[in-house]
Amino acid sequence: MSRMDSRLLSLAKFHIFCTLSLAAIIFIIYADSIIYNDSEKSIELNDKAPSPVLLQTHSSAGHLIKSDINRIALRSMQEETLEVGREISSPLLPPFNATEEERIAWFRSKLPKFEIFKSDKFARQFHGRVLEFFNNKCEGQFFMTWISPVRSFGSREFLSMESLFRAHPHGCLMILSRTMDSRRGYRILKPLQDRGFKVHAVTPDLSFLFKNTPAEAWFAEMKGGKKDPGEIPLAQNLSNLMRLAILYKYGGVYLDIDFIVLNSFLGLRNSIGAQSVDVASKNWTRLNNAVLVFDMNHPLLYKFMEEFALTFDGNKWGHNGPYLVSRVVQRVQNRPGYNFTILPPIAFYPVNWNRIGGLFKKPGNQAHSRWVKEKLLQLSGETYGVHLWNKQSSQVAIEEGSIMQRLISDHCVICSDTYSSERIFSNE
Image (tube, rainbow, N blue to C red; front, side, top):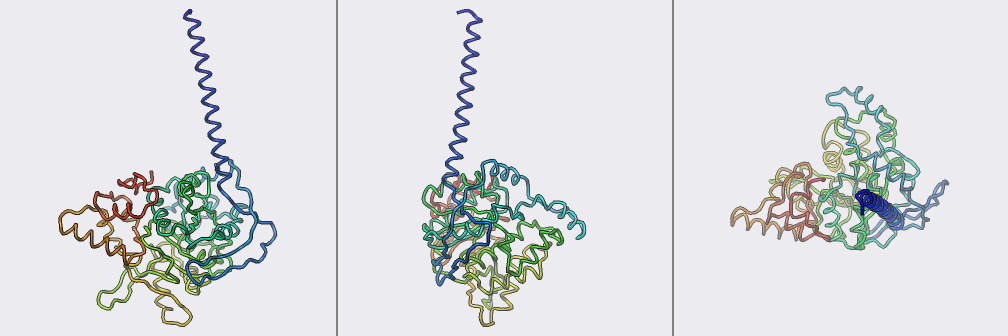
């Protein structure tokens, strides 16, 4: 064979290889879209007002809302791809040291980029999708929120879901998130869905969620660019409000996504946890809103939303969250008509934020080893879960023999190898 013939043959082989590779890639994408569209389910709502449905306040954590509804098709692949692309950008942060007027002007100019505010066709399906999902023989109704980009949903967040299903294998978890309600988000949740766990991400319709609540007027002003969002990222404060509204309208359990569930919540009802207590009096000194367990239409949730709308301050960390629930409970806890329980710190916050790093350290001596064993025994019996205080612990490595390593191995359901290192706390 001549040198020219050899080159032509090589070129032909190269073209054939490229063609086959391209065909394989197209097939994979097409197959993935089919799997996604077949696996993800939505509901169909008519343009008319929805017909009345029965929403039953549960008498225990296991009773759920009921509804008969139709289904609708998902957004097209193109819409999904655009949605993910838009949300990959970093969180929108206001300019540093700006005046209130400057922040409002900045916020008004950035409003089109706040995807969470949109009440588009897909978001308007929110109520029906919630009813459909929880009309599925759920043993416990759980909610989380995720307003960050989908690419930031990492191993730590996945562990929170795993631990929930380890304690509640027949529970249902809904993540309120526009970014996770996407093809990429679907892939993240699929390993749990494939094992039969009921988890679903749904784009929230905030206009509907806050409608007929004390937060409705506040949200209208904020959405219209007439209110100062403050220096704190608005997503954080929206999450504080969303958890109150979702429980008020549907009832159930709200959990922060940096919370490891250790024991079943099904015996709890209308409960909030104390973060700290006075050593002498044993009275609580601060409550926290990382875990909330409430019936639908509970009056305390209404008061929380009322306080949010009346006293909103986007410049003070915690003002619209832990400090808010503490203020309100302090005012109403002795009034009639507010039936709720304040659980001690051991229930949800067994380790305070300034000591959370101790759970990640391996024992340094025999005394420390004994403390680890005693702490694990205490957590197994008296604690519903552990708040990991992400802001303080997100970069802390998990050491061999630490409490965290034991908690992970005991409360995961897929138990990926990534949990054996600090990668659980990276968002890579």
